[in-house]
Image (tube, rainbow, N blue to C red; front, side):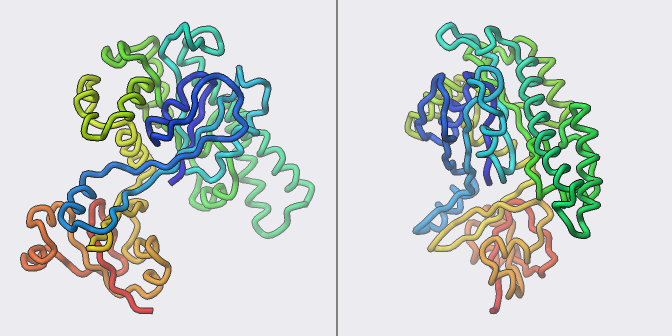
Amino acid sequence: MRIGIIGLPQVGKTTLFNLLTEAGASTGFGSRDKANVGVANVPDERIDYLSSIYQPRKTTYAQIEFIDIAGFGPGSNGRDTKEFLSALQNVDALVQVVRAFKSEVVPHVLGSIDVMRDVDLLQSELVLTDLSLLETRLERLTKGRVKGKDSKLDLELLEKCRTHLEAEKPLTQVEFTQEEADLLRQYTFYTAIPMVLVVNLDEDQLAAAAYEKHTELAAWAADRGMPLIPICGKLEEEITALAPEERAPFLKDLGLEETGIARLAKTVYSHLGLISYFTVGKDEVRAWTIKAGTNAKQAAGKIHSDIERGFIRAEVVGYEDFKQVGSMTKAKEKGLCRLEGKEYVVKDGDIISFRFNV
C-alpha cells in the first residue's frame, strides 16, 4: 500500500513521516526537489502472537510505503502544485496534515493558525489541479486524439467530473456507477483518492483534546467522510527514537494506547475497507492485505498467480479459534479447521493454507 502525505509548508508533514517510518528525514523550511519515501511495518499483535508460537525464520508484517512531498500552496516558492503532486501517482490514500500548534520558532507560512482556512485552501488546490488535468484530457478527446468505443463514455464521465469540480466538490463525494468508477481509475485525479486528515497539535492541545476551531474541523471532516486523527507530531517523533519496549509509558502519559503508525494504519484500513489474512509456518509468518469481500481464490493470487490459477481448496482457521487452542494440531483435532472453496469470502484474521496444483 502507498500513502501520500500532503499539506502546506511548515505544518509537520515530515515530522509525521519520521514518526511513521522512523526514517530520520530532515525537517525545516526549504524547497525539496525530491519526495521523502519510507516504508513502515503495520503493527499487529496477531502477527506477534503467531510468531511466538511458530518461531519462524522470518516474520513479515503488512507494510505501508509513505511518500512525503514538499509543502505546496502559499509559501511553496511559486512552484506549480502539479509539480509537487506528480510524485503521488498511484497512491492508495492521501494524508493531509493541518497545523493547530503555535510556534514562534516555526512561524506559519500565512502568519497565523487557522485550521479551517488551511484545509479549505489545500482542498481548493487539489480541485484546481484536477480541473487542469481534466481540461487537458477533454481537449484530447474533443479533438479526436483519443479514439475507440470508450471515448464517448470517457467524455461523459469527464463532463460529469468537471461539473462537480467546478462546484468545488471533490470527486470522493460524487456518486459514480460501477462502470464510471472503473473508468475513473485510469486517471490520476487527486480529489478521487481517499483521504485521512491529521491535525498536528502541541502537547497541551493533545492533553486537552481541544484546539481552536476543533469542532468546526471535526464537522468539516465528517461531512466529507474523512477520518480525523489528532497527533502531537514533535513529541511522538521523539518517542519513536526510544527502544520499542520503552515507548509504552510515554504514550500512556499522552493518553495514547498505540503508536502513530498503529493508529494511522487502523484508520486507513477501515477507511479503505482493507483486512489482513495470515499464512504461517516455520519458514515464515506473514500478513497479507486484501480488500474486504475478496474470495479465497483471489486471496491466493495475492501470494502468487500460480496459486490462484491452480487453486483447489483453502484450509482455514480463524485467528481467535487458533488462539484458544494454541496450535494447528489442536485446532484440527477440535474441528476448528475447515476446507473452503474458491468462492469463500476471506475474513479478517483468517489463517489460511492454500491447496493448489499447477
